[in-house]
Length: 413
Image (cartoon, rainbow, N blue to C red):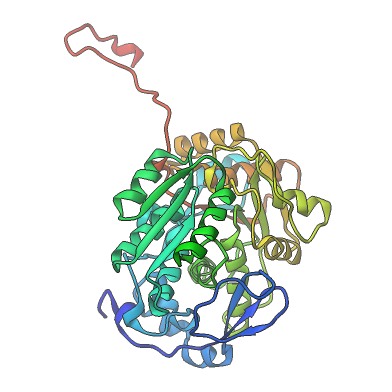
């Protein structure tokens, strides 16, 4: 089988319609949509009986190991509309030394930094850009804290689509330069990501850009749900007990929850579900606050700050979908400090050789905290998400200097 078989072989598609996540109102498939009539995200629905008859576990096992292996459960109908930079299946990396030290049954990390542009944002944006291409979009615009903008720029440039990206002024420099290097027009804004989102909305009205903001179009969820499809297959269709997910806009958490429902409907898994844990930073925790208060919606978090830029989202459009999944799974919300995040990144790097991004570090810090307070048992299999390569982020310099011509104190080395 050719390496690009998933990209070039036409396969049956099963999208039936789109549905308002709040009201259930139906919308026609194969048309350009943003939010629903009540301003809520739209969800893609499939003929799951049809999928059950067309996609088998044996068929999957023979396909190339990339995101597009799940074509029957994805919205892109024609191969000609697939935009790809090589979205490989990402590895699940165990933490055996740390697990033994903590007395844990199994700590696993889904390392999303192996994807194009170095982050899991590639999953959502490859699907959104592919569908934008299929539906005739010429220019996309979006706000970003860094990695999503980089993915959008890369996939847009791949097909000659214009991309306009707005980011907070303190977005990591590597991300800002990466966005520009991959062909987008990028603008720094003296505010937070929701302030950038307001500019995108205004620009969409003034310039006719298509708003590709998180959950303001239906297809980023479909890309992100492949995390759930993928980890289920990698674990031989037995889901982990607990998933710790770094939660900003929450598209991945929502997408995985949707994936598990679809997998059950086609007979690939049973009704058992992981407990979904929404991990946020102490300096920006609107979802955790809403969960603690028993609220269905999360109010804006004022004065947001954290070193984990990817989860610095003061207000999420899909807040109720995140909270619904957390509660339905008997999960919880948890916060960690920036100091705990840095300590987690340092420990996992030094003891396991796995370089986490700050948001990935937040999931390990949250797991350690949840173990300490009894919310997670030692015998539970846990999955942490490292959502980007740690190479994109500043690292402390612990090197020392030796003069080549001077005396060397070998005993001290």
